[in-house]
Image (tube, rainbow, N blue to C red; front, side):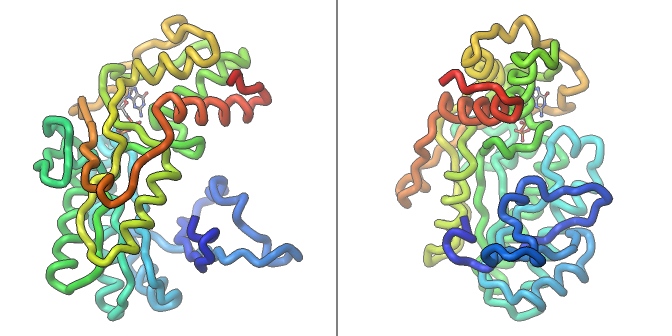
Length: 311
Ligand code: GDP
């Protein structure tokens, strides 16, 4: 979205021995080719390495920083609590410090999360007290407060976007929505027989990621930084997601889905539902419905296997 608006975009990339740029390969332009120049630059760095962040700020001199990086998987955060605290929590402080020390006037966006609300009663808005229920949420809570403190202490334009779950065909394959749409397509293709899931009763306010990116951008262009809830105001169970996904291709998920306790979380977040009144008043309203979202994701996973869209 930033590229389409004419921005020069610099991304930080973690070195791995396998390729990990699949989601942006369609944007990347081979510097040795002859095509149009794309204003996208990637730099090696890591949230656990402060030097790499200082270098990045110094070299790029950014106007806007969208901090979306994290160890972002809730279930995995129970297996790697300290790493999650380091990367998701302290990592945010390291970027804030790199900006502050350099005297940067950059606007800073923090990917806060509805997981902060944890077991707080729905619907949740900007005034709802946080009750985090995972190492991931606790790390994000620390980051949330550091952002607020840097805003107040140093007068930085630092904003928390408290986004509820947002999904798209690019969602990581181990999050429940994408896990379901990929498996449903694969089952229809005859490549897979079973799908193993955890808690089917939890409710989430699932929205369409491209619209949430518009919200992030909007929050960075307004006059004042702050803390803002972004969500649809509609929640569904994992079960309902299964109904929509498998129903779309005329299959009954009960024939394929099995419960594997491995996917249960030691503490679960049962019910997340946004009260997006404030965002709505600012002019942000999602257009893609729950059913529409499931179908966009299903169509993409069907297409990846060479199957036609039923819609
Ligand atoms: P989260 O809201 O950030 O934790 O996003 P997820 O997509 O990982 O999980 C959403 C909900 O789906 C949680 O309540 C999970 O417990 C539930 N869930 C049920 N089965 C699964 C599964 O197999 N994988 C994942 N990731 N979540 C599952």
